[in-house]
Amino acid sequence: MLEIISFTLGPASTNAYLIADSESRQAVVVDPAWDGGLIATEAVRHGWTISQVWVTHAHFDHIGGLAQLSESLGRSNLTVALHAADLPLWNAGGGGALFGFQIDPGPAPDLDLAATRSLSLGGLQFEVRHTPGHTPGLCIFYCRAENVLFSGDLIFKGSVGRTDLPGGDWETLLASIRAQVFSLPDGTRILSGHGPETTVGDEKAYNPFTDV
Image (cartoon, rainbow, N blue to C red; front, top):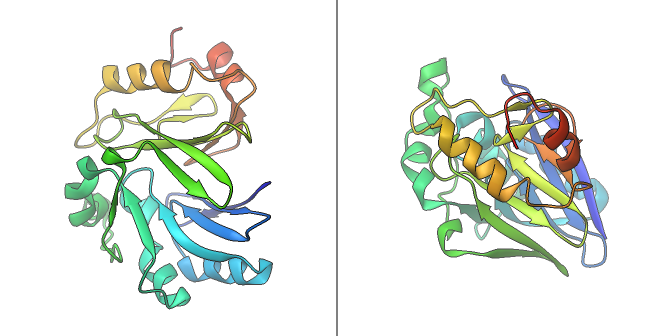
């Protein structure tokens, strides 16, 4: 069974997710937004072992806690997954300078999501879906067995990701949503990078920014 703990962290109120397979007690952090020590402490409290970090995209508010997370875990072998198209953004500190933030992005990504169709967490499998538009390399993670999608900043409850930052494109964003999110079952939970949880069905019916 998939267990999920959510955090809202940092200057942009970004959602970070600590997820674990209850049987193996293996854990992953999806988007270590900020305050990585807090995330590490929560994993220890539950008796979970974090061995991977899955980054939906490389904006500073989604990676700002990785350096502290890695340090808190004392892990030199922490796998960090990111799509190669977002490496320039990662190397530029996630674009934080545009907003007055200088961050240490932490250990460099060593798993290229451009070459990865699925990710494993214990006995659970997650589909990696490349969904450019907000950034060139944004990826979302879908666990079919648990009916849950981690959508980063692609789509939110009643909204969608911004496209006015470098690498953003409105029509590409909409195409990604239609092909990779709205093709999923209506009951699929969407856990996004900002704001509350929603479902695929609700966003198909009520999201004012999409036209299906």
